[in-house]
Length: 125
Image 1 (spheres, rainbow, N blue to C red):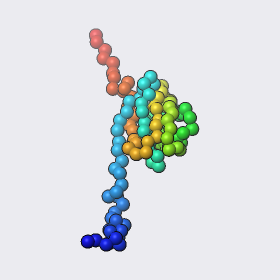
Image 2 (cartoon, rainbow, N blue to C red; image 1 turned 90 degrees about the vertical axis):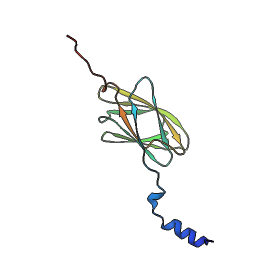
Image 3 (cartoon, rainbow, N blue to C red; image 1 turned 45 degrees about the vertical axis):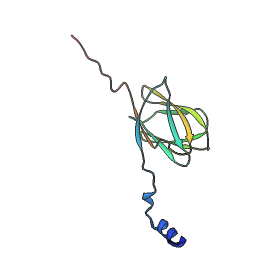
Image 4 (cartoon, one colour; image 1 turned 180 degrees about the vertical axis):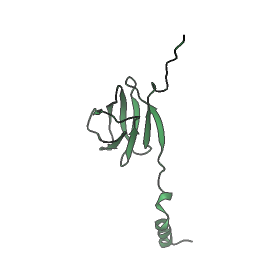
């Protein structure tokens, strides 16, 4: 049988990275008519990466803190529960998002894709 002291020593000597949650990355579409949901975990930050630097960020309520670094918008929940919307203005577009606070399982890194980038014109002559 293992003693309590040995168990505690074993847990304390285990490298922290074995308990750390891996950072997840996923893509979302920029849309101004259908807001995309962004889940922000309490006590963690969510990074929303845009194709280029946002010009303006307009939140609904002061439930989240926003910090802009280059093309990234870093979002942190200020309350245990809450939701609001935010509109991010880019060069010639705007993206709408619905932000919600979650206890765990939030979005770590979101890469914003512009659906217009995947479209191109074909000139038929």
